[in-house]
Image 1 (tube, rainbow, N blue to C red):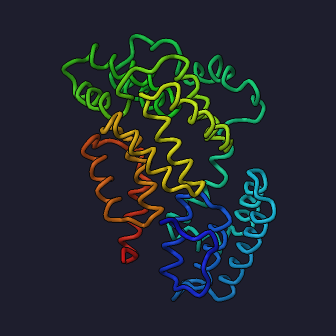
Image 2 (image 1 turned 90 degrees about the vertical axis):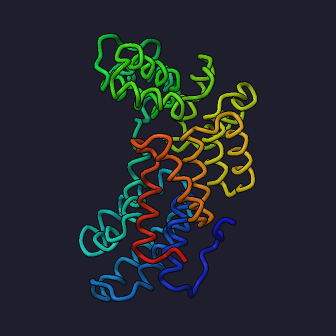
Length: 325
């Protein structure tokens, strides 16, 4: 079960902390703002003065109002920046006291400014022709003559950009050029858990790349629509299922998210992307026992994986604060 759309009143500090982390993974900004206010108001034994707590509570209440009335990416970003500027001292320190709060606070701004608005409309072509080559990620071929470490790094970057065949090619290059190295062992492992089980046709890769771009710049409807079409046109490509599962989860459609993860597992039961989607579901439902199993499975698949570190951070914090019950 997902947390309520309306943040309950008169809960204890610990309950608001639990709700806050669940709202954060769902990216429900209005609820995050409300719940953060309640956390501040109910926090026991604060190291800050009562005046400082009231100051932050009022500022966060203002943020809540902005999000509620003008629920758009632009207004949320503006409100977050205003909040950060206004809380540069006591209030900012209070938010930074809790690592998940700190990450959410920073994420409100950083995720929305990754790609400039100046390339809207032709952004896929602009990125293909200019951005990717500029950062060493040509779309059509893997550069020769790199070290094993450089190819591993390339694979990670292709993965992050949503380009599975680039990641596969870079990992295969490690295996071919450095077959007896430790990097080759890591590459073989990642070929099982970090790339799709079956090769992805070029057009499907382009579409998923577009879905990844849309997600980064908060064009959620576009990202959702692309993924919906991809699972119909390319049903053996598991990455769109995982992305769509997280999108549906954040829209509040838990059953659809679960179904998509189950379908993806039938395609590839060793995919870390699928495990990451499952981790999001587990945290949103506060199913900490299963979340711990998911994190352990990811570590067994790839001990060096960093893609779900945020869930490890959440779980560590939950345990440290005694919020597991």
